[in-house]
Image: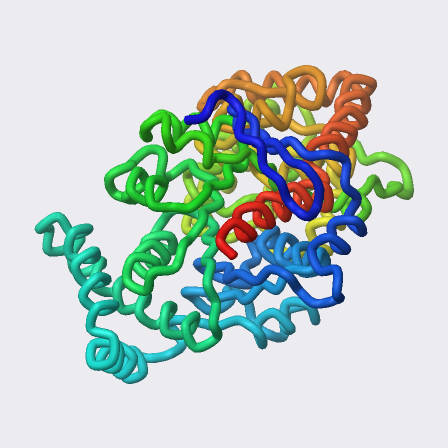
Amino acid sequence: MNGNFQHLQSQAGTSTIAFDGEPRFDSVSQSEFCAANAPDGTSALRLVYLLSQYPAVSHTFFLNEIRELRSLGFTIDVASINPPDCQNLSMHATELEEVDRTFYIKSKGAASAIFIAVRTLLRRPGVFARGLVAALRLGRWDLNATLYSIFYFVEALILGDWMRSRSLRHLHIHFCGPVATVGMLASTAWGFPYSLTVHGPDEFYDVEKFYLRRKIEHAKFILCISNFCRSQLMRITAPEHWEKMHVVRLGVDPLLFCPMRRDGEPESAVEILCVGRLVPSKGQLMLLCACDLLLTRGYSLRVRLVGAGPDRKILEAFAEHKRIPVFFEGAKNHEETRQLLARADIFALASFAEGVPVALMEAMAMQVACVSTCVAGIPELIRDGLDGLLVPASSADALASAIQRLIEDLPLRRRLAVSGRKRVCELYKLSENVLSLARVFHQHLQESN
């Protein structure tokens, strides 16, 4: 490494990537960036976003990020491994538009996949051989892992063939699971570079299963959604890879997610809202345990769980057994979630494992007092006692006590809610953070041209 700082020049202004991973830039507005990026009115930079599923109800930040980048002059082509997880009739016009312009890898079908593989073998044997050898090495002589690697290899051939046909030269991947395995194999086979946005936390717990070290070492550059995320990558890689890791936070639109006036008299029952997939890591069962404690202490409350997932039956059975008033809302889109947040008194997320939850940002932006856990990147979003309350993960008693404080102390609840929105506006504003993302892309992609 050349010292503690690497100075980068770009058409959008002078930038510095600090050794701590935070991108540092001169003050450049969105309009100035657009002018520098595409001075002749054409898009100067083009890249592919590879996603596991797009559009996806639980990952609307993909759509927001892509559309913001396009507004800055980037041409973003999107490839998705899987089709959307919602019916066309329930999609907004913007989502339907994205479906029409997205390349769906699995929609090619078996016959088409075999045709592309055979054509690549005959016309580009070097591409086929590089990809196949890399896939077999991932298998590590384990039959099950090898079979999965072969499937990923075929998907990588389809992706690379599509990118080649459209003269696309850079691949950016969100998440480090199987979708990144496909992207890494495509990069190895077809010879184009890739970059990653790393969220965590699953891949941090099983580095070998997700080939995380290899993905980081082979990537051209890496975007980390938090300093905690960056620390986990630094933990498993040699120091010479640290400088290519940049902390670029996710964000929400505080103009869309803004405080909404509540009409009518306040209800006696406190409404607690939780938004997240119904899976063990989100800790909804722990939240219901805490609510059961509060009910035994004589507090009046009801819980709304927004999200779908395999834990629903377990949660329903527990709520029925304990007679906890729980409303299972299912998966909701942005507008529906906003309406539910507008009615909530407290937002609670009892996660056991996280990246940095966008759902928390949305609740804070709408000035709803939040309670969450001290895991992963959450303490970077919420400062305990300032922007919300944080409790140890797995402690139903601590979670119940934190919610009880907010029920009893209305001034505290209001103070935390106001500070929470301010925190999001300062550090997690979508347009500002996508502008930082665009500058990192601009620098690294310009270096490739």
